[in-house]
Every structure is written in C-alpha cells, then in structure tokens.
Length: 76
Image (cartoon, rainbow, N blue to C red; front, side):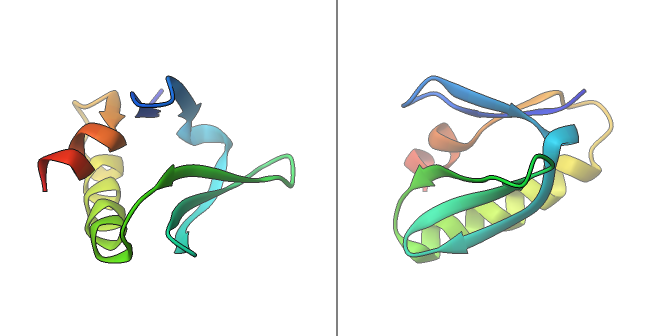
C-alpha cells in the first residue's frame, strides 16, 4: 500500500482510495472512491503543480510507501 501524507495537518490517505488527483483553487484535491473530494494541501498553484508531477513519479516507484506532500512543497 502507498500513502500520501500531509505532515502539517497530520493527515494521510491510502492511494488505493484515490480516483483522481488534481490542483484547484490553491488546493491539492483528491477524488476518493466513496464519492468525496478532499482538500489535501493548500499552497501556491505552481508549487502544487510540481507536487502533482512528483506524486505521479511516486506512484510509479515500486520501493516507496509514504510520500510527505507538505515536506516536498516546503523544500521548493
């Protein structure tokens, strides 16, 4: 299992429950299998677009299990 983690809000989500990941109104949004949309992380649009690209790489990596989205955005 792979998880997206937001260390600022101490929030995580299992990627098995995510249908879509997108950026909208300065939020990284997650569409979930139960029909909800979750505002996962707030930030500048350009930083969130870079985060989105990095999440796509994370999904393709076989060895990684947890990705801290907040830490990535803070490192930009």
